[in-house]
Amino acid sequence: MPETTHGTQGNGRDHRGLGERVGQINQSAQELWSEAQGAVHQLRESLDLTGRVDRHPYGMVLAALGVGYLLGGGLFSRLTTGLLGLGFRVAALPVVKEELLHLAKNALAGMGEGAGAGEAQGEPPRAAPTEPPKTV
Image (cartoon, rainbow, N blue to C red; front, side):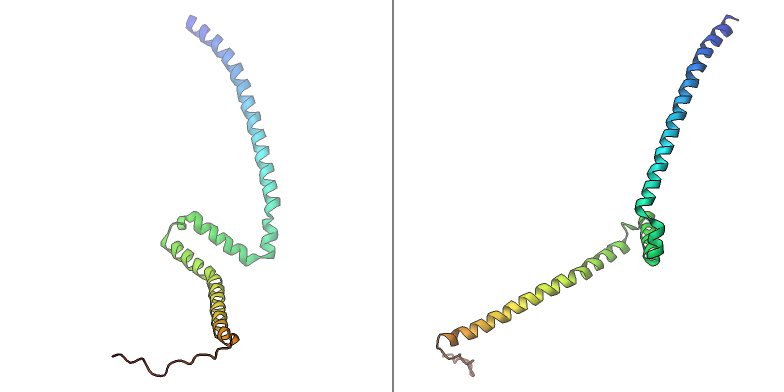
């Protein structure tokens, strides 16, 4: 019997301490839950998903497809690599086109200046040779 009495006294004090501890954990969990709800509400207001869907329904469907593709593991696939390569090439086309046009304009301007420079000094423009040079 002494074992039972000893165990009851110890259990009685532990239950009271355990009850307080459970109350603290419950309060902490409720605070965490309310903070999480506030954060979700704030995120919803800042993203304005319903307004975006109303304004751009097709764009939001495409965004949802893209997110699903990425979350589904499509980021490191051959298809993604090919699409990214194509995207970079298409994005680079205007830059390359502009650079080539700039180089061509400079080359044409340089040729025009070279022909005009001889005339400006009083020399007649040189004609291209009609016959190839003879070798002895």
